[in-house]
Length: 245
Image (cartoon, rainbow, N blue to C red):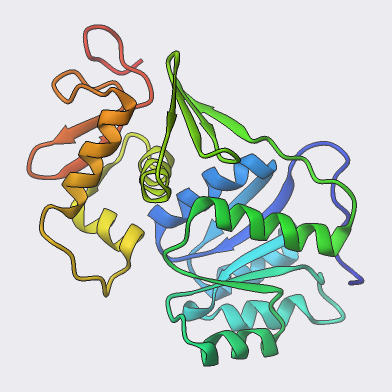
C-alpha cells in the first residue's frame, strides 16, 4: 500500500474505531493495549471521516452496519491515507462478507467477537500493511489482575487461573468498563448478540463461575461487585474495608 503513515519507532500505533456501542468500543481499546495501540472511538461515519484526515490513523476498525463503507471508501482515495481496515458486522452471512471485501476491507469479523481473535486480526493486517515486527505485550495489568491473552491465563494476586473463552470475554467486558454498572441485558447483548435467546440466569451463572475462578467473595468483592437490581460492576482493587482504592 502507498500513502499511509509509517508506524512510529516508539510509542503506540494509532487505531480509529467506528462503533456505536460504547461497551464494545471499550473492549476493543483494552484488547488492543496488548498490541501497543492507541485508539480513538467515534460513533458515526461523519466523525470517522473527519478523524481520518485530522489524526491519520495507522489502522481502522469500522462497523459496516453504521456506514463503515463510507469510511472504507475514504481510506482508499488517492488523496487520503491508505490504511488497512478491519470490518465489523452483526450479519455473518457470506454475501455481507463478500460485499465488504469488494468494498476494499482487509479483513472482517462478526460481532460478538473474542478479544484474542480481534487482537490477532488487527496485528495481522498491520503486519501485512507495514511489514516488520510489531510491539506486543501479552500481559496487561488491571489492579491486582494480570491478563495474559496469549496463554488465556489470569493472575489474581498470587494465583494463576485459566479461563474459558467465554469467561475471558466476560472479564474483558467488565474490566474494560471498570467502575460502570453493566446490566444483564447489556452483558447478554455484548457477549451473545441481540438475537440470542437464553435462559434468564445465563449471565448470573457465568458471572458466578468467573468469580469462583477469581476467588472473589461476593460479600466483600475484590473484582466483581453486584449492584442489586441493576447488574455488575468491575472494581480492580479494593481496600480491606471494601472501598475502592
